[in-house]
Image (cartoon, rainbow, N blue to C red; front, side, top):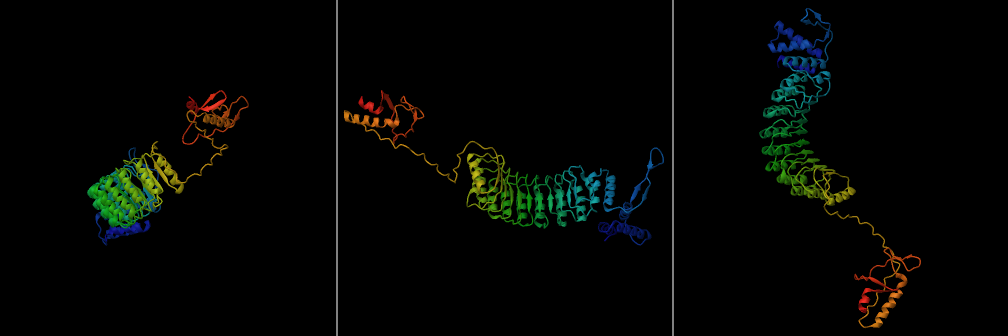
Length: 502
């Protein structure tokens, strides 16, 4: 082991005082000829001894009007975070970059978030120097800084040196294929990464081989985000194989890519055999018909998936019908996002009927049908489902079409109103030339005159010149026969009788 390696290990594990003592002793031996070190090692040791010497600023002694000299006197040993601050300042001066004020203000935190600060490759190189001595850092967020492969190489070396960083966000940093190779090699050597965000880095389809091997062999990764890249046909096959053989991965995001057709089908085969994945986001791809059939099998076989995002996948009503059949046999999925596809109100009914079916095993609690219009039947069916179980469904506009579904619970029949009078006796229809029949008809009408009255108003009031009293209107005679009455003097006879008389 070289002298520089020994000194780095002493600085990383021993207190600053011991590191300074060992550095001084090494320099003393080298000057006396007892130890052979190269020039770079000697400069590094000199730097360690210089920065460990605490200083106090005094008033500058002005030698002339153009230059000033600052006299520094050592007073006490520097704290570890002060050592890191001095290293950061020195590296920034050497590389001609601006130091990060957020890191200089509080370098003791266990998380460092500097998104969209314009670090660039040289800024990442300057930041990697103090991070090598920071053994408390766990979360590192440097998204949107365009560090490139050069800056990534120095940051991965810092991560390998600290052995404490578990969550890294490197999204939107223009890493490319070379960055993918550097990162995959570093993560294989460092078995502590749990969260890795690599979205929007310009990875190509061939780079999926590297990431597939990384996901398959990693024993520490729990969440991987590879969204908004250029993965296509080969990526679906590689990622499906990796997920099939990795049961420790819990969340995988591959949205905003170009996985479709047979690639999507191969990807679903790997997810079907996985027994550890809980969250899967495959939105903004082209799963379509082949992918929907594979997802139906995933829902039937997989028993660990909790959240599934299928939005923006060019699915139609037939694809949703297949997925709805798979939902009836799944008892673990809690959240389903399926909106923003080429769907009509039929798709929403398929999903809701799979939940409402008494034989269904589904355990859905949240369904997102964003921008999917529904009809009146869906609204009434949703009310019935909410009476049985608690569920939250987000949908689009409600159209004024569709027949309301009959409710299963029938209401109690209303009591029929009591009829005071019995049915009227139908008058006997006389035959032509029969005067006896005409007299019987007149007599039967006179008998009913006491109940019917002379004239009746629209609401059933009797008007015969005396006080008005209300009489219930009798129902029309059976067999649909309605007889209209005529007033001739004080006798009421039916129109049909007058026709026979004529």
